[in-house]
Amino acid sequence: MRLHVVFRVFGEGTSSVTKGFTIAEGVASTLNAELDVNGKPKIRSLELTPSSPAAYVGYTIKVNVYCLPIGSNVTLSMIGTDGYSKTNTFPITSAAQSAGTFSLSIPGAAKGVRDDVTAKVTTSDGQVITTTASLIFS
View 1 (cartoon, helix red, strand yellow):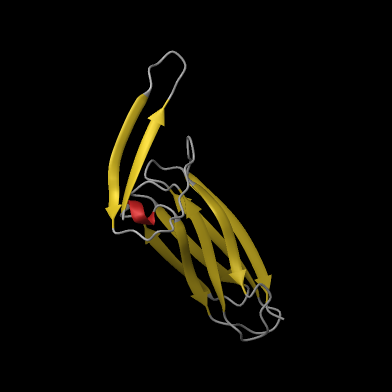
View 2: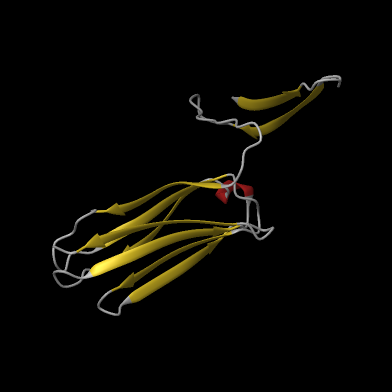
């Protein structure tokens, strides 16, 4: 099987433009694809799993991003009221990384400790997009 993509652009006062090319050969018969006109970089979601961990139970931070240009960075960070912190930055070095999920594992903490989590995208042109979440160990 061969995957062909054809883009047709129509605009007011312009003639149509068509561009077609082969993306991949041997692709599976089922393909999930998304086309977003004027797509802009964004953070689609930020999840903490589990969202309310018991004392000393670790959790995972997951961020889902979309339409990031090569040269962008995704940074996941957390700061706990117990003084523990952790940060990891994921550079976007290929088009395959421009949309998807990045994760960071966090160890558990004592009951009542609050962790504040930030997901930050810095695009190659300097745009900054952030979202935050928090949890308390029960």
